[in-house]
Length: 386
Ligand code: SAH
Image (cartoon, rainbow, N blue to C red):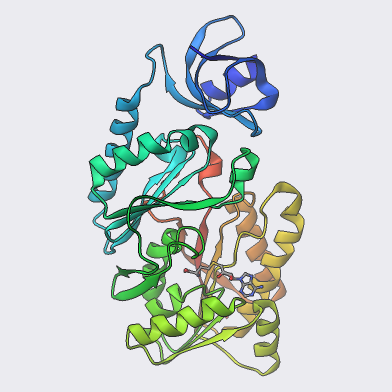
């Protein structure tokens, strides 16, 4: 069997529960990219089996510990466990994440359900090579009407894999209607961001709705997730997104749901917040859900100043008693660092702010305790006291 030996530092990482071994901790490779390999430690002892990438900085993703060679039945068992877990969540939605990579012990694989269809992403050389087998298992376990591979994320380039979108099974329509709570969305699985929707925010949208009233601002709205969920409890909602396509979808989704108090504007949020402040406008509830400002470590300082600016400006637009739902999906910015930057924004805005709820990505996107990288979405619900 193909094998890879690792350094003592690599062993230590595995012992600490982290499944990734970086290239710099690889000593010797007797394998081809995409192979499932035996992992050997510095004393020649067998540690377990891992998925090997010949290109990525993450050379090994541990798959099993111990001597047993993993076969397809392990993939089947783990997929089934991931599906069964989602079934226990009793989500009030027809779309959800079924497989969340490492956090389901299925490294490099994402599978989302949109109604009768599945949309998957193969993010490692091994899961890419195994797509025929994985497709067969998904058909066996979930019997979808169609499976789409949204293999266009940029991270695939780090694996030396091309960006490609293709139907792997059945047929997949251009739009799929899904429901979250009371809101219906038309989702474009071929071109929508991520796999079509920001499923990870579902439970935060529903939590935010508990505080919704008066005038609402949904900044970085995408196809209107927060705006549409909060609209029934608000007098009016302003949804802002820089993308014309997103704004068109907000309007179409609002019409689809018979919601008439949502105005959608194609604007840069940084400019729009400044303009709203200049005009002396106020909002009773504001949502800030920007894209990941820190896509890598070198982007952190700039990201922090971006987070600070939008939070500062939003806090100024809130009257006392108003709510701010503020999010960061940069895993390079920890919860503590994010809290610190929002606190700094509150100080500059001369606002006393209470934390009402600390939230994270939805339960169908679980976090692996020993893998900080799987905790990426932070969401604070804050109340401005004075
Ligand atoms: N809140 C959404 C998800 C937002 S994703 C939901 O619940 O579904 C982030 C969005 O920010 C994307 O739609 C992107 O088009 C938009 N965006 C990125 N930079 C922006 C900017 N400077 N101003 C306004 N929108 C921006």
